[in-house]
Image (cartoon, rainbow, N blue to C red; front, top):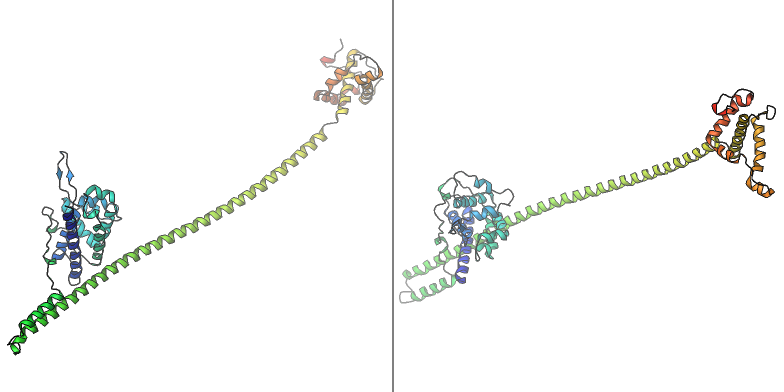
Amino acid sequence: MARNAAVERKNLITVCRFSVKTLIDHSCFETIDDSCSEFTNFAAILEQVLTHRLKGQVNWFGFESPRSFWDFIRVACSKVPHNCISSIENMENVSSSRAKGRAWIRVALMEKRLSEYISTSLRDIKTTRRYYEDGAIVLGEEANMLAGMLLGLNAIDFSFCLKGESLDGNSPAVIDYTPYLKFTQSSESISSDEEELRTLGSGSEGSTPENLGPQFITDEHSWYNKCKRVEQKFRLALEQKGYLEELVRLREAQLAESVAQNKIVLQRMEETDLNHKLEKEQLEFIILELQDQLAVLKNNDLRSRQELTAHLTNQWPSPGALDADAVALDTLLYRKHCGQWDEHSFQSLEQLSAEISLSSTSLDPLHSQKEGKEDTPSLLGLCGSLTSMTSYKSLTSLKSSECLASPNAEINSPGLTPF
């Protein structure tokens, strides 16, 4: 069983290779279209290769129905850029899957992309195993050979009509093997035949001129066979030349595309480096500017603090003078309240302040302890309360008002009216 499957695969691949060579030879003399028998045979062979061990489609009832290779091509070749799958799906005169598959073969040949489609579909191993059974040509080593031999068809210009009877999907494709079964006599066989003819012609009549005819015919056939062999070698060389030229063209296109992509990547890298350098310079400039602004703010803050300290120091009097004036004012108010005011005692608030400052020394607890005297009720508590801002303001108002200017004047304040 394994031998039969291997022989079947080998026969299909060999016949496909022969059909490709025949197409290339025929394209040197005529245009390849639907009327070309070589193309018809090639299309049938390719269809048989792509249908080899193709899994059937299971319906709702569990029965398996035959499937066309178009179901596999439609899924596997959908990732090919600028593919013709959607165009074939939208064709009005093509309805069956087999007809769509045949139309795809013709369109791919006219686009010179049949090898690209086959290579892309064979690389999708997951999809290929889903549609084909084990032992299929597309799952074996012959698949790479198939994609390589189809590459030579890109050098041929095809012209097809997609509305003819060739797209009929009702009849299966049949391969004609007769063009590839021609017998070619080997050189050893020709030599043995010539020896046999010489032996037969060496009899009694071998020296007559009439016996020279078969030898001349044999020489003519040998030259004809030699010419045929040379012609075959020439065609083979021509086919290889076309294949190599197409392969070189494809590699040059891929190299040009890679070079263009490399240039684009290098240009993007240069632009990115330049942008990074500009951003770095801008960030460094911003950092320096912020540092300068911070230094200026620190200097302004220090200067403002110094100015505020100097302003507050110059605005308010010293604490000693403030306490003396406050005590003098409170003493004056107390005496007026008690009716002990003496017009001739103090001519000014300064004299009263001087007296109070002298008496405060005697009121100091430490001073009294040093002299051994007891603490007597005094104005110490009252004087302590006169260090506030209100007392200082009242002292200033008394300096400028009638309290010190005319001691005999009547005090209208309700809080200072004598009882």
